[in-house]
Amino acid sequence: MTVLGIGISYGLATLFAMFSGMPIAFALGAVAVVFMGIYMPAASLDTVTQNVYEEMASITLLSIPLFILKGAAIGKSRAGQDLYSALHAWLHRVPGGLGVANVFACALFAAMAGSSPATCSAIGSAGIPEMRKRGYSGGFAAGIIAAGGTLGILLPPSITMILFAVAAEKSLGRLFLAGIGPGLLLVTLFGAYAVIRFRIEYAAAKAVYAKTGATSPILTRDDFTMAERFNVLPRVLPFVLLLTGVMIALYGGYATPSETAGLGGLLALALIALIYSVWRPSDLAPILKSTIRDSTMLMMIIGMSLLYSYVMSYLHISQSVAESIVAMHLPRWELLAAILVMVVVLGFFLPPVSIILMTAPIILPPLRAANFDIIWFGVVMTIVMEMGLIHPPVGLNIFVIRNVAPDIPLMEVIWGHAAIRASDDGRRAGAVLPAGNCDVPARSRDGAGWRQVSFGAGWASHRVARTRAR
Image (cartoon, rainbow, N blue to C red; front, side):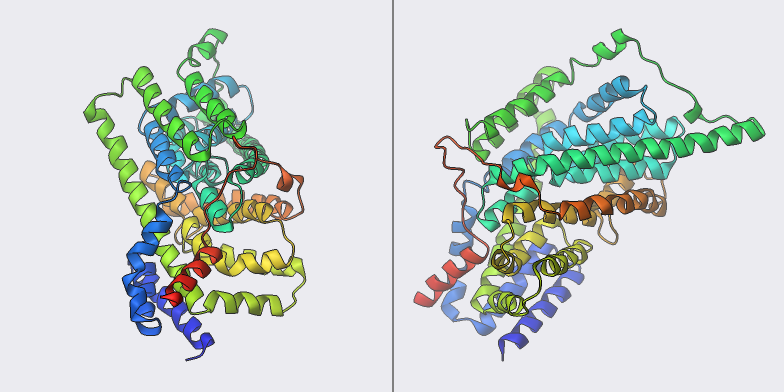
């Protein structure tokens, strides 16, 4: 069979396995093993576990479960609710201050936890009931939290960016630093949307009051004394200091990403023990169980995606597709647009982790040939993949919000953030323009940038060479 035929059958088999309801990790692994048995030497099956283990035993990938531990420690405590309450107390004078407080709380929590679902759950459980109680529509309350939760894969520490840095063999520090500017821009735009949407709902409620005399809670104004504002700070400041300390250690070159992740996880456990008295084994058990469950799931996806990419490379599928794309001689911006459209479509059905690990061997060589900055593309790709988190049919953040606020109809949740998605398209288009944050230097303790572990196309070609040598 030709490479084209093998590639088509490989893709169809992957789609069939995905839509059969099989977990993503097992679907990718099953397809890879079946094609290894059919098209590759029998000896290659004997090296599967060894090859996957060698690549999984990576000091860079070690940061993922440690960042998950930090997010679980903060997410299982009342840190999210306290953070939201403090921001609301300080932003209540801003029109739509409750919505703006939710956006800022999502941004800060995402920077501490690095997880979009955890951000939605922690901030949504406190923010959505408060917004509903004060007269905000269910769609507005759910939409602003679902959209704000997407900041978890853009603001450092982002697990998605960690995987992209390893797949692209680029500096993780530079990628983290490049995501801060777009992340802050996103926070600003979401906050502006919250103000505009509040003014619309406030004007509608005022018109109803003038016509019928029926009042709405949205017309009332909260007021906090200066003493009340400062009283909420002690529970929040330690976590802000944790975030600041981790960022200084990371970008100041005092620690590697993995060391920073370990430091953040231990400090988060220490803070929730001191502030919320979460130190008993019964209190820590849910945190550790959540960390083990999420880490195992994610590392299984990574391992099976590595195997999937390896088989693609051995069968010359990824190389042939990349060569075909380069041979088309598309203008560089048309090439970028086509790749981003593909990422958007994949984002409707797959999580960002799978998209990066499955597509990196195919899309990165043509982008390098077109002289695109890969750090910059990593940020753009992460921004585009955010759409998948709030877009049906998968839309993970949508279903997290449904669990937090089951009384809000699913369609209302979807339409609630549809306007945010539409208003965000301009910002995503702007992100495609060349930006200066691509060339931000990253330092490490040796001053040479953080050493990355090679996989993706490089990993696959290395394994292919070893297998053929055997």
